[in-house]
Length: 557
Ligand SMILES: *[C@@H]1O[C@H](CO)[C@@H](O)[C@H](O)[C@H]1NC(C)=O
Ligand SMILES: *[C@@H]1O[C@H](CO)[C@@H](O)[C@H](O)[C@H]1NC(C)=O
Ligand SMILES: *[C@@H]1O[C@H](CO)[C@@H](O)[C@H](O)[C@H]1NC(C)=O
Ligand SMILES: *[C@@H]1O[C@H](CO)[C@@H](O)[C@H](O)[C@H]1NC(C)=O
Ligand SMILES: CC(=O)N[C@H]1CO[C@H](CO)[C@@H](O)[C@@H]1O
Image (cartoon, rainbow, N blue to C red; front, side, top):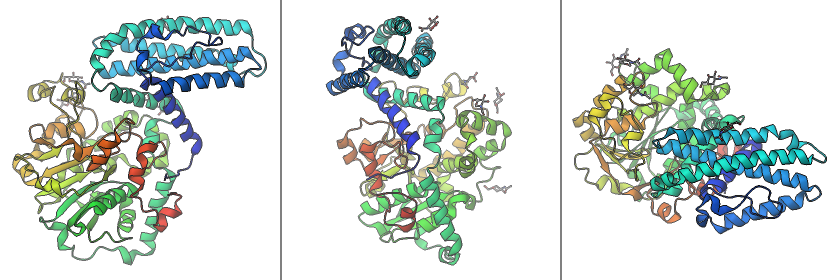
């Protein structure tokens, strides 16, 4: 089962690149062309150490590749040689780039290493660029040119290996915990760099709406307009929407398909669906589509409310700091230039995902008590999660007076407060412990009474106002969340919420199968075709493939 989206050329390219990076860096980073007689430059693995951790299948597939490419070009041994050299350069460049991003992530004492690795990666790529004509020209190639290329490569690879063996100790010490997991981060970072350099930035790939999704929203919207009588809200909302004895969920999304998967999965796994109430909030643009989507079928008695951000009148710019800040031209510019990394060229996409609405949708999570004045507790779900169990157990947890029930994400030195906010700032330094453990948004159980008592919204406003010029933290909702709920977060058992299905291919299936909620955080969303195949079915099994509009828009089951 896979969702087929169009534009196969680009995506095949992205996927191929990802696989290359993965092959190169996951395997403890050293796959060199094995020493066969035709492998030209030095290939003694032990020079770079740690080859013992190489999975043998990866190693032999490298071998296989080398043999095949030799066979393919047997007619011209010089070309085969040049190709092999080029492949070696590519591998080393990827390794160097992976190390550079490691070094950045680890904030090694010496930013020198970061710089050296980045420079090395650049040097290696430049070398290939300089020999492009040699490698791509048809016909026989010149032996002295190949020798020149080889010499250049040899010098740089020697430098690379020296640098790597110097760096390895400090890396290893810091990487003992969760080595693989972090390698994936590095690969991810690299992936986005590569795509940035190419025609597409990762942000475009990850954030732009695939045509099928756009089509679905449009079809639903057409239906909404054509049959407007059918979709008007009843004059008085059903009492269940405010009944504090029921199980309430908050879902904020501008993606109809994703939101429907969240609701479908929660309903299908609920023991008593009629006791569950889903409050879906979207932007004005997607309101019609969302309304139609959730009226198309029966949800086994579950209650679903669809509203737009604009329906919450109290969220105006004199009350909400984020709105006020967004209105300042200064921030607009910052958002466009940095956050979207020139992705703004795609103007239709930008119109569709207006950062103002996007941002307000994201920050709605800080206004839950005011949005639901009658409720005592609510479960917040991101739109990239899938529910796999009945969740009512959450409502039975003793929150000890805490506001936010969340799973913690720190391990070793990673995902601590120091990584999310500016500890050079005196206010941050004074109030927070840099080693405090981070937690994740995605599935958060909020005690709204405790929230009101602790005045968390005021806390959030206080800090968000101070951050007008972004010296406390950069963009996003996690840092202000960590700040707001610093002393009022209750850690939940990790099986409630398993993260990383959008970037980490190494999560165990056992962990996933035990999870109440799985979260496709990361760029490889299940609705994109850069999604990871091994996890996608967990999401697609809740897509309404039998729905007419879904079929019309080329989603293939
Ligand atoms: C990159 O290449 C330049 C010259 O081509 C050289 O001076 C520099 O040392 C190289 N950097 C690294 C890290 O190898
Ligand atoms: C903004 O909302 C607040 C309530 O949150 C209200 O008191 C105020 O009058 C509103 N201001 C405007 C300009 O609408
Ligand atoms: C940042 O904002 C604060 C208050 O909003 C202000 O006092 C400070 O001067 C600003 N800093 C810069 C660098 O603009
Ligand atoms: C962190 O805070 C300090 C002190 O206000 C400021 O000088 C510095 O620019 C901030 N760093 C960032 C990255 O904003
Ligand atoms: C074409 C374009 O908009 N380029 C901009 C990309 O973003 C950088 C800053 O991040 C600008 O300097 C470029 O002008």
